[in-house]
Amino acid sequence: MEKCPMCEKGKLKRILNKEIIHGVYLGTYPAKKCTYCGETFTSGDTMEKIEKKAKEKRVWGLGRKTKITKTGNSLAVRIPKEIADYLKLKVGEEAYIHPEDHKLVIESK
Image (tube, rainbow, N blue to C red):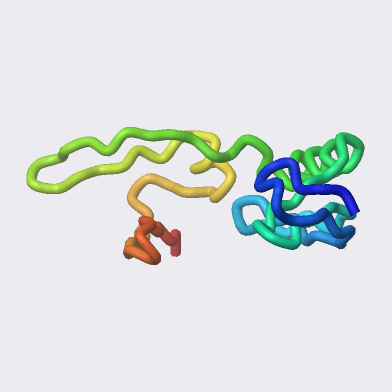
């Protein structure tokens, strides 16, 4: 077994890894996982297949940075157009917002 290039403590073991991007399951692909730190590694060919599947499912590149702004006494978050389009969000539509595990979660209805 080869040594982990990240932690240099564990060994890389062959696995089948479930790939999920933004909560969307893309399939199971061959990978190597470190027995110590848990980091996973995939080949370039496998990454191309994962990227192709993510593009087919329209989740490739959906992650964005946005600014938190002030509106009156509240804070506001802008939702980028690509994400709004993907989720089919409409102006005036209700959403549920809550904290979860030190993250901000916004659920569309």
